[in-house]
Image 1 (cartoon, rainbow, N blue to C red):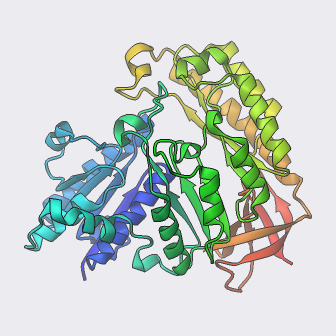
Image 2 (image 1 turned 90 degrees about the vertical axis):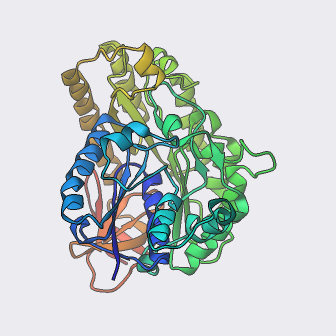
Image 3 (image 1 turned 60 degrees about the horizontal axis):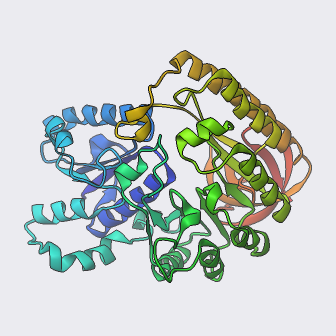
Amino acid sequence: MQTYHIWTEGCQMNVADARRVAAALEQLGYQPAARAEEAEVIVLNTCVVRQSAEDRAIGRLSSLRAIKKRKPQVVINVMGCLVGYKENSLLKERFPYVDVFSPPSDPLPLVHFLLQREGKQIDFEEKRVRDVEMYGEMTLPYSERGKQVSVFLPVVYGCSLACTYCIVPYRRGAERSRPPGEVLEEARRLAEQGVREITLLGQIVDRYGIDQPGYPSLARLLVELSKVDGIERLRFLTSHPRWMTDELLDVVASVPKVMPHIEIPVQSGDDEILQKMRRGYTADQYRQLIARIRQRIPNVAIATDLIVGFPGESEEQFQRSYTLLQELRLDVVHLARYSVRPGTLAARQMPDDVPEEEKWRRFRLVEDLQEKIAEQIHAACLGKVEQVLFENRVKGRWRGRTPTNKLVFVETEEDIGGKVLAVEIIRTGAWSMLGKLV
């Protein structure tokens, strides 16, 4: 039996990309292996959005040299943002033992390599369309069908906004919306395979359709997806404040299958830093947006992203971010320390002048603040009954999420995977809650 192993680092888009690669490999007859050492095909799906993620990818890649030396027949494939969408000759020179380099979201270079190795002749131009249909838009790998309750479904690839700190446009290319018919068909296939929740993905997901005249808006796409039988919950991420429309908010408020859960990054609470980041809004405009979201969607949960230690960020500017979070009391803060990303405008023009120790100090201050806020938000759920979609079993407990994306654990011997059940919350903490079935 031929086997494969996929190591994935980074964002939800990388998770979706790994699913596509796994589906393509299983279409060729490969089966998953738990460890890289046991596989005939090893895929490293990489992220470089932060220096720490790039370091992990390089470390993992370097460790595979020993496996390749011991088993020369093993195929090593590196894909994702470490590779980028343009040919990277320096990467090939540095890691000559890698057989295939693939751009993000594209399983075809690996598929073609494996087919050619088996002696099958490939006419790339004639067969590319058929290959994309067969391998590029697969839904679930065979090994996951009937097991996956919630999956990520990309609807926008790449990004054209080019915030000064962000490497994504340089590695994933320009913004490209997928055809709505293709998205709907994939959603139908996922539902047939047991999926109950779909999260639509895009670097700026609320820009869906803007690059393609005649495409529906994200709001209209969600309405159409809500009609797919078997799909019980819909989410979307990550949004941008400039494109969060009233139409989209009204769909979240009025369509039962669209969950009241919004991911809307702020990145900084200081106007000068926001301008240097090229975010296109002010802190007060972000405040007004949060107020508008909460006014239109009762009981909404809001998550944000924040970067501390951006070039030139003073203590006073950091305090504005801290105060903004104190004031808005958002449900989740995805927190990052600024790290230089080669090729970005910030890397070329702005010295990384905030010391690492200071970045960590600010990081921990925000972390402590948000832990207290999350504890208080969750404590308000104590004794209430929530509708929880259960996904899988973790250490003897069933794990699921509320409509507002709160993590809930329940102890039961019953198989409740894929079910939406009423749960009374009996214990709360900063990161999750414990409940019992009603």
